[in-house]
Image 1 (tube, rainbow, N blue to C red):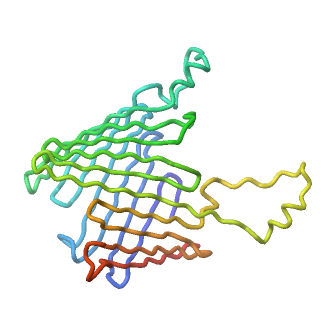
Image 2 (image 1 turned 120 degrees about the vertical axis):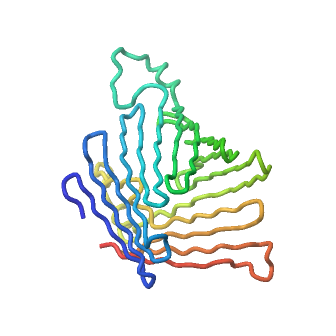
Image 3 (image 1 turned 135 degrees about the vertical axis):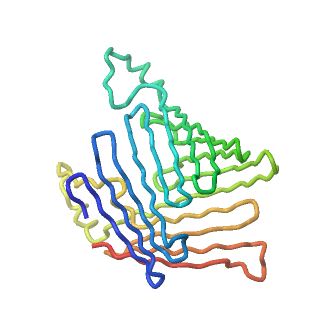
Amino acid sequence: MLHADTLLYGRIFLPQSTLEALYLRRLSPTRQLKIAAVSDSSLNNGGTILALLQNDHGKYSTEYMYSTDSALMGVRGLYNFGADPRVEPTTPTAPEVTDLVQGRFSAGAELYYGLLNKSGGISTGLRFTTLPNHTGFPYTMTLTLNPLMGNISSTYAVKAGRNLALCSRFDFNFYSYESELQLGCELWRRRRNHDVEWAVKKLRPDWKRPTVAPDDDVSGILKARVDQEWRIGVLWEGRIKDLLFTLGASLDLKRREQIFRAVGIELQYSS
């Protein structure tokens, strides 16, 4: 349900009787309040509530968090280096100089502490992503570090084509020397309306065909991942008219006696 600057959302899972609820309100052009709740008998105290106060000023953003789970409190911050995309430059910029700026570098950090379990944590991260004027394949690189736990994680994602995206993630722990490598991909299937193709060919050259938004013609997405232990995950998200469905499977090629670890399906109706 949407009313003015407020969004209310709810979803129930059967037969587990798990309930999800979301309250989202825009307090100002740069600030919004988000409250998410989950009701489930398997959780501590029968459920949990997460409240987020988000501030986005374009050049930088902050987020304040509170969760009823362990009375967790946290703060996050992100700073984008370079020019603010929301502000027009005060002095003219030469086109050749503008074309040189084809990426944006960002740095962020988060700090959290649980009042009930008396434990906290801190992590930092760096990100570089290309801008729309980048002439090559769009890509994003990230590096995150948790000094208390000794974990470091790096990711690289690239959109290799109109219908294909590739990504990789490498995790390493300085204390245990354990590492993990994962590779993944997404493949989009586009919708083709064969019923009107014959009519389009009959159109006069001066008639313009209606344009379709880039994401409106996606009829399905295939997602897959694999790690160094040959554990594979496959997920297919599709739509049949107003019915949204998700099919997924998890495989372990090293367990010859039971390769399939899990298989699941999810159905949603959208009108």
